[in-house]
Image 1: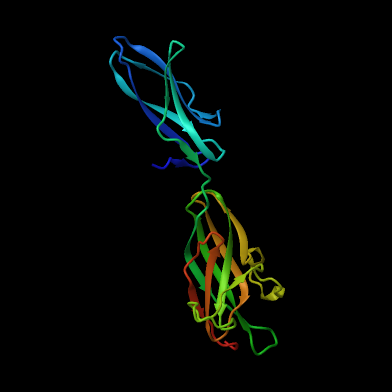
Image 2: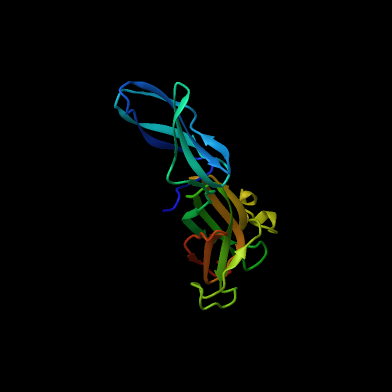
Length: 242
């Protein structure tokens, strides 16, 4: 049987049934605590309760898990009038492991705006990616990157697009002329970023600026360095003179 695993600092309640097998009512003081290498790391504090003669009751022991990873033995001491009358060790130890962040991706959206170039016959298209990212695991930081594939890349028959996917690492609209950058564009996310989220936390990712292939499909995906990824979506861009 595997020891139960908990996250550092998480709050739990242990339960223990205590029976008064004497013919007299007693008031008990009890403590549940965790020990590793002879050191007490966490305690429920003193829990006081009274049992009638022959009565039994399940007692709750709230406890906060230690911040240090490792395996801990679980002990329960019971006192009456300051005298230790029972010292117990749980059958299972407790293991503290750090929870890891797990990002999920939803509402993935790809737009390919067209930018006319002043004084030129041809303009160009660029990639605009938005996606909602939610942490469904533990608190932490992951690297999140946008990946792009189109007919400007090398042929890769094993890829869903038929071309290689390339990781975008530059900031949104890096190197662009000011007249071509949409309002707020310089505040959008870089193609690769370090994203920190708590459990249940969300973030709206928005990157734009990589040049799209014209008169062709463009494929995009978000990926993180823990193996998480969004769906792959594609969108068609028009000609250079649209």
